[in-house]
Image (cartoon, rainbow, N blue to C red):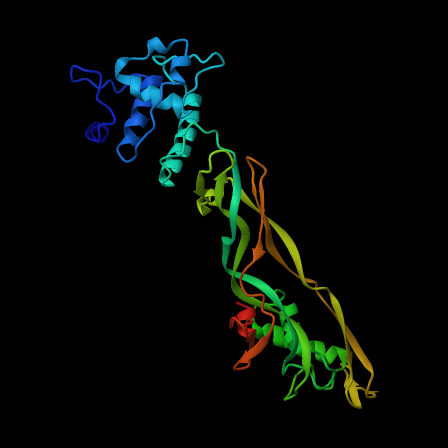
Length: 349
């Protein structure tokens, strides 16, 4: 109340009274908003619409100028018969409608177009668009497809990609040691002469590997709109879609790599031993086993949907797509953005 009085938005009821518990009448609401705007803007006041109101004589003298402005600016237009009911209290629905129109009027004034008639019932069209970042997922785990990388993880006995096996089985074991023991046991079971251990080798292979990255999504959105009736322009704001209670995310499944089989062959003549030490000769080129790798997918944002209006904003990943890979030390990384695949120790954290 002190702020409103100091800024001359309200003057009270007279006799040094304010009436804080009284209902607000329609003409009082018009005066408050009129006083608020005229502090900073030059307002157009016309009695054209007020004169058409059947109950124009009911407008209080102190609210006359404000009601002329409110009716000419389409803030208030009355009911189907044009009746304004200026001294009646305003309903919550009426106040909501008034404030919606009030914000539009203020937007017109802030666009530095004081000569634009505020009586316009704006019909907006988009005049300028731009790619706008609308949502960001930070420190998100995703998978990338490493094509033709020099892995240094190929078993010299059977050709198995041991690093891919660790990645495939990362959720089956708690520690690297547990996984290594299982891999060694698997080597004995399949008869691999090297026990599924890799040595210094240079084989280029395709791998699927996990990474931790920040993914940004962008959309082609309007950044400026123009009224087709009066020419008023207004900017678009990212705040329009910032309310995650209204705008919800819909995701899509992006396949990184379909499930595939990896045949394991004996690279040289060797022997397989059973639990009693009995040897069985295994000639070079023998098929030892076939590993079935899982299907890898990422869930990405497909579009944002306004659950109140049904409007959809389709997005695209504007951050790095990781098209090329290099090495930092002995760990593959994206050659463009530098994001690294998880090391063997990090796989089991």
